[in-house]
Length: 224
Length: 225
Image (cartoon, rainbow over all chains, first blue to last red; front, side):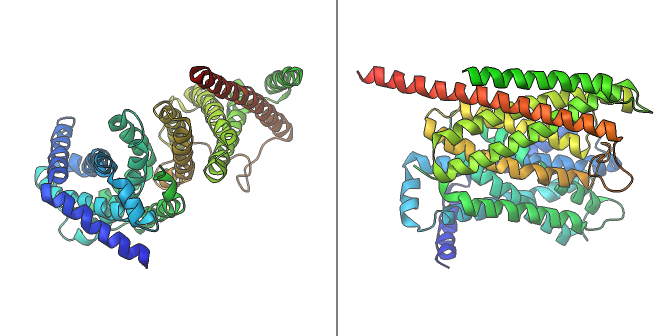
């Protein structure tokens, strides 16, 4: 219980820090937009083509954006060594992770939701009726990206070449999320759309597995 | 020293005998012909590589738990030897696939998950080069190693559900599958040989890592004086 209340306070802190400047969100959104536009030059973005390639492209853009967006979540704490203060403030260091994961998931979801109508307009895709399915896919996908990404951001923050290292460690680990979320989104965007529950289950399993691993080993990531 | 030379001689001898068995003792496969003989080497190396990565995972867990440098040495050793084995697998696989499937590579579950496995351990080795402090390096790479090892079965599951072409498991693959008894003997002899050879490499590399550690200690002592 103390874990959750600690984490809730820390989520508030993360969100407040971000919304004071909004620099992370604005840069990420512009980055996703650029990736989507640049990718559209590599194939013919007509309706049929975009139904096949669009979801993969969208998730690639989210993944790249996340690998950049997750970078500062521990680097920000290093400037004034606020991580030590955080560690002293909470009894279970997992609360720090939980808060950062929640905040990162929220930021990613916000980016995704803002980009969805833009993407739909640019690639002539329609999924009005499938919105609940899309939201569920985005939520589970973003959660998976955030869980693994936050843990690896804690690793890369302690290494040299950290800007390059995080995508290097993160992207191969997120292969399952990329494969499954793309396939689920393709099925939601085809002419006879449906929600693939098998994929939703696999994404939920991925999230649960890595959240458990992080719960077990989280304290070691933050050791001095 | 003598013991390690003897071990090396046994390991290399076993690999030579296994190669002889694969080329001359095992019967010729009916449809694929001679090219199928690469399977003894390919699959046996894959098994040895996977065992090595499992040992790496156990060493990583033990390091996180016990914090003894030995486990870190074993971890990096196994990651390197495992990556070498999987490199061999990724090279011999396409050599077999080109004449049999007509293509060098396909994005099927086993191939893709092996490829991702290989990339993950290359990243593990890369991460180690980017952290200077030995204890931090050991801990961070051990944590990444745990994540990497857990990820691979999920990658396999994720891709298997959507795309797949690799031959269905021949060994322990259920009814209707199976090897000729002589082929099976040759195969398991190859598996044994590759495991012994991997163990030999691990021992060699482990002592090299230990020597590196000792040299670093001596250097630090010399600097203090």
